[in-house]
Amino acid sequence: MKKTILTGLRPTGNLHLGHLFGAGQNYVKMQDEYEFFLEIADVQALTDNFNNPEKVRKNVYELTMDLLAIGVDPHKVNLFIQSKIPEIAELTVFYSNLVTIARLYRNPTVKSEVSQKKELFGNDGESITYGFLGYPVSQAADITALGGEVVPVGDDQLPLLEQCREIVRKFNNIYGNVLSEPEAVLSNTSRLKGLDGNEKMGKSLGNAIFLIDSEETISKKVMDAVTDPSKIRKDDPANPDICMVYYYHKLVTPKDDLKTVCSECRNGDRGCVACKKELIKNLCDFLQPIKDRRKQYEDDPLLVQKILSDGTNKARERAKATMKQVKEAMKIDY
Image (cartoon, rainbow, N blue to C red; front, side):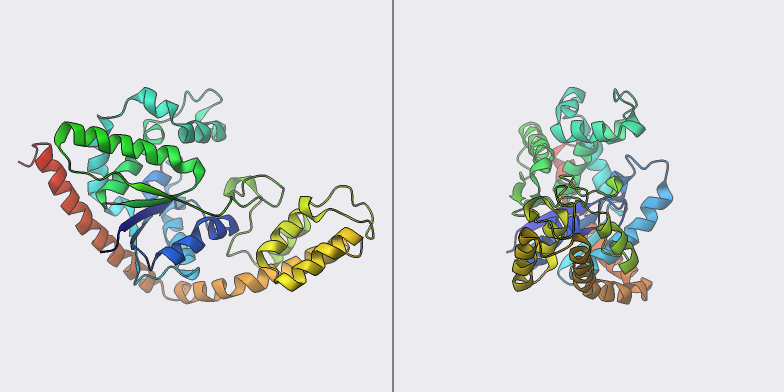
C-alpha cells in the first residue's frame, strides 16, 4: 500500500520558477511513489484575499493548468478544490476548540506572514482576521481529512506541520486513537532567489519569472536583473557568484555552456548585456515545452473542469470516511 501524501497551493497567482524548482519538480517525482492528493486551497487564499474573490476563483483554474503543464499527471494525482470538501470546514470547527489564541500567535510562520502583510493587517497586526490567524487549524483539517501521512514542506512551513501534529495528539488524547500524526518530507531544494537578489522569489515582490511569461516580459525582467556592481565596463572582470544572471544560468543553461559563461565573466571576456540575452534565450527554450502543454489545457477548459471534478470527488469520499470516524469518537454521530 502506498502512503498518502497531501499538499496544497493557494490560488493567488500563476506559478513562477521558484514554485517549479522548489516544489513542482518534486511533485512530479513523488506522484509515482504515493497516493497523492494536491489541494487547490481556495478557502485559505480567501483569508487574505477576502475582498477579491474573483481573483481567487480565476486562479483556481490558472493554477490547475500550471500544475498540469509542469507534468502533474491527473491519473496519478488527485487535484481537488478545498471549498468543495465541506468536511474540512467541519473539522476546522472541531479543531478550533483544541488550540489557544496564544498558541496561534506564537506560530513562527503566522508571525512572519502577518509582518509581511502590514498593508492588510496594520503595522501592529491589530486588524488580523480570525480566519487568517486560524489558518494553521484549517491546514490541520486539510491534512487529516484526507488521511495525509506525508506532507512535503520547506523549512519555513515546519511550524505549521508541528501545530497539526499537536492538534492530532490532543484530539487522540481526548477522544481515542483516531487520527495519525503526519510526517514531514523536507524539500532538498533551497529556496530560489529573486532577480533582485532577494532571498525569496515572490509574486508580490516583483522579482519573479512566471511560467506563463512571454519572451518580451522575460526579456524586460532579465535585463533589469542584479549583476556584480563592481563591473563598470564591458571588459571588466566580474564575480559570477554574486550575479543573479549567472545564478539563473545555473538553472537552465547546459553545463558545457555554463562553464564558458563563468570563465568569460571572471576574465572580463563577456559583457552583461550579451550574458543577459543568452539567459533570455535559454529561459524561453526551457519554458516553451511547459507553455505548449499548458496551451492544450487552455484550449480544452472542460477537460480541466473534469480533472478537478474527478479529483474532488475522490477527495470527498476520503474526507467523508474520516468524518464518520471523528464524529463517532466525539459522540456526535446522531
